[in-house]
Image 1 (tube, rainbow, N blue to C red):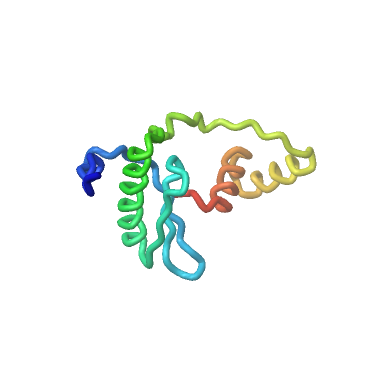
Image 2: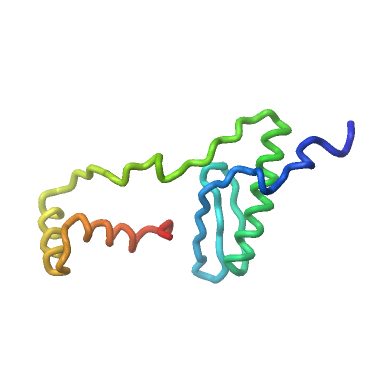
Length: 124
């Protein structure tokens, strides 16, 4: 068996472009991951280092999948999400949120989106 395979010639420019999540760590450094590729995750002392390491991990992930005949998922996109979500909540919470939105001078929808964004580690 040859030590080289067709995957040795993967062109980084032709690899699919996947959405990346970059999260700062509490103790310093960054974690970068591609959720579309299960287990495709890398760390670095800086955002640039984490992203560079993730590119290498992505290449290896795809090479391994090709060698094993595994399916390589297509990149997800924002087109897969409408941005609309129906949430049921207790009436008391609805009232409290509505009052807080009024105090903040914005709509209930804007206020809830703001709160979710503040709590999410995945906002960009």
